[in-house]
Every structure is written in C-alpha cells, then in structure tokens.
Amino acid sequence: MDKPLIGIDMDGVLCRPPLGFNVAIRKGPFCRPIRKPYAFYQTNRFHPVARLFFSIILRCKYVGRIPMTDAKSGLEHIGEYRSLILVTSRTVLGHGLIKSWLAKYGLLDIFDRIYSNNTGLPSPDFKCHMADKLGFDEFIDDDGQVADALSKQGLGKVYLRDWPKNRGYNYMQNVIRIHNLQEVGRYVSEGDSG
Picture (tube, rainbow, N blue to C red):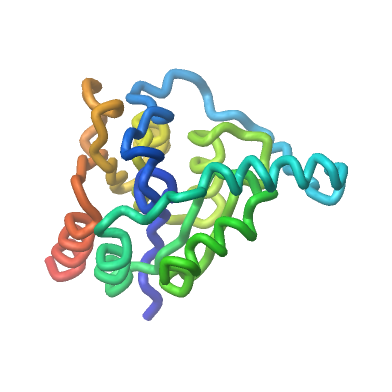
C-alpha cells in the first residue's frame, strides 16, 4: 500500500538560515484570496544572461548554509510513514542547485519527488497550488502565512517549525507547532498506529 504524501518546505525547515536568524518568514494571518489562474514560467524564454544572473544569486544564497541538525534523521523517521515531497518556493531556475545542495548533505535520495516554483506565485499561493495538484494532506513549513493559508485551504495537519518570527498569532487548530522534525515523526507514527 502506498504511503500518504507529506509536503516539506526547504529553507528554515531543512536548510539553516544564514547566521541562524530566520528573518524572511512571517506570522499569520494570510488575509487575501489565493491567486488563480496560475501563470507558469517558461524557463527557456529567459535570456541566457538572466539565467546566469539568477544562478549566481541562488548560489550566493546557499554559500556556507548547512542543514538543520535534525534534518536527515527527522526525514528518515517521517519517511517510514509518509512519502516525502519537497515543495520549495525557490524558483525553478535554481532547481539543479537545490538538488545539488540536497545531494551534498545526503538528503536528495530521501525525497520521492522535488518541486521548485515554476509559477509566478508567491510562496503561500504556490504551496496551496501544489497541495491541490498533488493531493497531500500534511505539510511542514516555517512561514506562518504559508501555514495559515494551507490550514484555511483545509489540509489535515500543517506542522509549523517554531521560529521567533512566526509566533504571536492564534493559528487554526490544524496548525501544529513543532521544534524539530522528530516531533513530526512521532505525530505521523502515532496517527498511523491509532
């Protein structure tokens, strides 16, 4: 029998933020309608110089960045009960770089599928789109607005990795604050056994 899908964000969940400060995230609420229809990037239309520029910028974003200490063991534990799908809002132009970073730290083969943002959508909209498209009912993220949008869309559980910047909002009941990925492993193992 196939395992249920779980979507997992990359930055701030698996990849440690620069200097350990996760300043790019927000807390809830998510207050606007999800953007539809979706405008998909056609990467072959980007000028080669633009692709090179994006590649350099993305490379700089990952220089010296290492995985969170619980990334590999947490993913392996969750992977016993769920099919792991990486869904990052990083642009599809950096898809190869994302895969290289995961491979460097032994995380690439843990995932069943990897998706980067091939739309013109901001992070909450893109992840809601992917939840619709792929049909996962659980997601792990660090951004409070993403968690709020997914929870309002009706996902069964949204695991919100705790950071100071996503605190101070009363999230819906299906948003579960976690401090490490092992906690998600415990939730999914207990849910499957009970």
